[in-house]
Amino acid sequence: MLDNFYNVLLKSREQISRSLKLFSNQKLSTKQLEDLEEKLIETDMGYDTVQDILSLFQNSFEDKLSGDIRSYLVKSLSVDFNFKNKNNQTVILIVGVNGSGKTTSLAKIANYYKKKGKAITIIAADTYRAAAVEQLQIWSEKIGCKIVHNKNSKEPSSVLFNGLDSAKTNKSDIILVDTAGRLHTHGNLMLELEKMQNIICKRFPEFDHYSLITIDASLGQNSLIQAKEFKKYCNLKGVILTKLDGTAKGGIIFPLYKKLNIPVRFIGIGEKLSDIATFDPELYVDGLLGTKTGKI
Ligand code: GDP
View 1 (cartoon, rainbow, N blue to C red):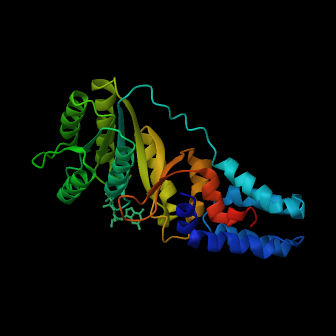
View 2 (view 1 turned 30 degrees about the vertical axis):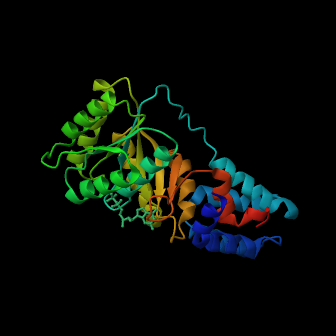
């Protein structure tokens, strides 16, 4: 796990840690502070986080600086998830824009829980994209879990209802629902998400339920706007931050917490079923700063 985080954050680390290292052994002039500010803003960490780091540069003792930055960043990501399940059966609705990694992440999470001994049902409720259903069928066979789909239906809520009914009968522990990709500007599709949530809450109140949004880390600040809009329609309880491998925009996680108060639950670190990790603030920050050994 430690190496997963460390390796995958290489590009982000190169950007963030290089800027910090460049300035960390000296008292900074106003010009140097401005240069550092500019470099840190480029990492997508967000204005507030950058200002807090600059203030640490001005106020921390030299030998404490890297430890103080690390502690501050870890604390920023250590939000209490309040994510305890009351009941045995939990429905997880996966939402997000097209191409952000919904279907892939759903399969990875199914595989993750299956390996923990949980009984899984996948509900393929993306009725707009036949390829998504086919992809999930292949994955469900590979994982060894149930899947409910209806290729003839164009009505996601009906597929959802049938899937939940079936998961209730077969006593699945985790029920993962794939939804069609949508832009936050698609009013009707956003209302459809609301409808799906209502079906879960009102028709199956015995299930715990929450939604996770897939955010493509490589989109940087744009992903914040998406998440903000989805939050208006969905009971978003977490983010799956995808495609962290290959992007230098790993700093985007800070504004996600600060501006939206949505915690990251999983990170996507590749295209394979096993390329997912549960989120750990300390490992993440060490991966960003290069503090695996304690120092920047
Ligand atoms: P959806 O449209 O939101 O369902 O997106 P998909 O799950 O179909 O994923 C879109 C593309 O992103 C596919 O080519 C996936 O293999 C790829 N993908 C998804 N998650 C990751 C990830 O964590 N890392 C990388 N490198 N690729 C990913």
